Length: 257
Image 1 (cartoon, helix red, strand yellow):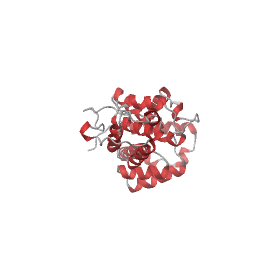
Image 2 (cartoon, helix red, strand yellow; image 1 turned 135 degrees about the vertical axis):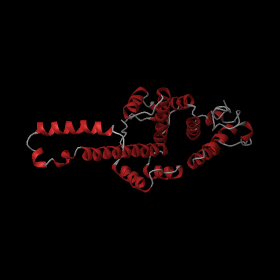
Image 3 (cartoon, one colour; image 1 turned 90 degrees about the vertical axis):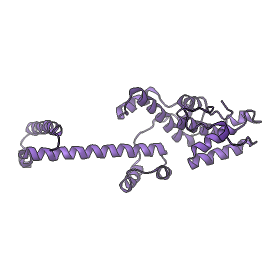
Image 4 (cartoon, rainbow, N blue to C red; image 1 turned 30 degrees about the vertical axis):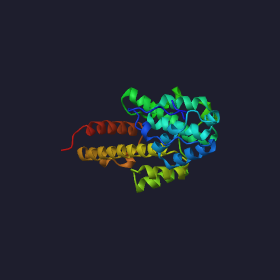
């Protein structure tokens, strides 16, 4: 383990640099190290950030102060997250108190890391209920949480902006995700997850519409039901809806001709 807290070079970790890729060992002050970490973090160049952390000397004259710098700790957490070293990420987040400005990004990494581990363990993508259970099992540590209940629903302004961008491009590249994250106050990971979930919902809605079309084609009598007849009684309405759903399930299983 280097002074920067990054994991030594490992063939299994694509973002962890080899020794010959490390930058020359230079004597930076704590404030200079923090500035470089923040600059590389904002640029999104995780590989360069990892190389910089690994290049820091073990015997830094202000090693204790360096190990308490929020910018450095946040950089270590980011590198650990993108390298898939989740145990190291959890240790950093649980052992150090972070300011509120860092909470959003660190909370997103904490949750996403636990989601990824759960998906690997179960061998399938997580649904909303699965993610809720993961959040209940691994609550946010108080070091990155001020105690307020966190809502997993975005504000209307944020949702509106996300929908606008989605209509323009349902598959944004990393650069666009960072740009949208800056505009909404979210993290690139949250933006990416929103777009992924929206695409899944749209595909499900399209499949449902195709099912209804099949139903009308195979059972045209249902398309002739008049609204005034449906108003005769709640029991009749419920019965017809139940039958409609059952036929829909059957028709959806019929392959296209």
